[in-house]
Image (cartoon, rainbow over all chains, first blue to last red; front, side):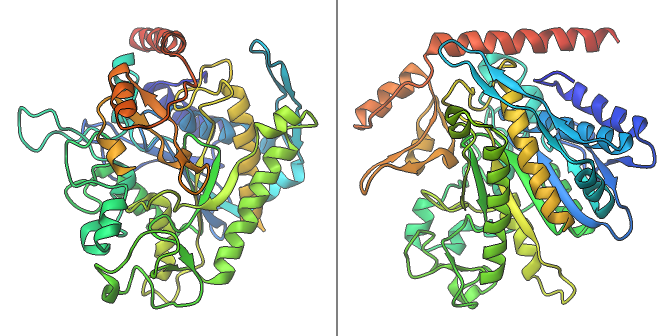
Length: 386
Length: 76
């Protein structure tokens, strides 16, 4: 499978993985077809009954081309290594662009770790959430920057198409009700169907693509989740909708008394509650992912600098609502006494600088991004396997 | 920042935002010439990471590969 893959190549690869690894890897068609009628499938690998449920997703934003490829090549390497009883080898790479010539060494992840990950986890991978959007973004350079899905316009003849799937999940989706006036102004979300970037959709989970993710999260009761995006070299943990605090459990998305009073900014009177131990665990595993990438970059300080991912809360310059990773984390606070702890991240892979190509790396630099993400995800899976 | 999302021809990545100092943030994105002019009119500083011609070359590589793949898929 050669990056960048078409929608068809991704479907073919999912079928091949299931066919080549029967009994170990199963392909399942997700419950909802896309607006343009494409079926969407995911693969499940490993432990089966009793395995700790882990879920990885990619391809939510159409223009972010690397994440689906990275997820599928990781699965391929993991399955091959496990069946051979061998180390998982992340190949060496040399960035040969003029004036760079930076070498990244081969890294071997021990066969014992591969075995532990495969046998202890029940791993599901939905590599391409938004096939319609990817097909459109890849149709011509004029459409390269398309981000949303391809929901048809509400009014025939208008050009306002698509929903930002990463604003469509059922958590603070109704942002105008959720925030105070300052938060409403600051939030990265829009009720305007013509907004090119962050239209939240006509309702929470209105989109078949986001409903697929939500249903898999719920039905498989995922305890570890990563949604892979690009770009900015960041490992983002909850929350993205407000600043974190671990003092006052009443300041929670679940508490309607705060509707219209949340400020959505750092240092404001409202902070979203996250238990201290849950916050610490996110930082601990995020740091393990970070360290795996930097350590795997070898000794060249330029390679190490280019492998530095920031580990930080999703709230940065302004808040976001309705994101997949915050939604996944929110499920552990539902009224369900059997709800397990959930660790959830958004992983923003690659960079616009250093010749990495931002949303669409060229094939020459893609292996650098692929290798560092494989190292990070293996560290994540290893932490999940315990 | 939200108003940046309303600039036609500007596609930025929210998570690339980083604080430079107390008063300034930096964010990365893709912009047409018209979008760049609109941003300069607002008094924003702009630093080119990739020139338009280089981006066009990158797209040429990517879309050529995709076109070839789709042609192969159509035949099989």
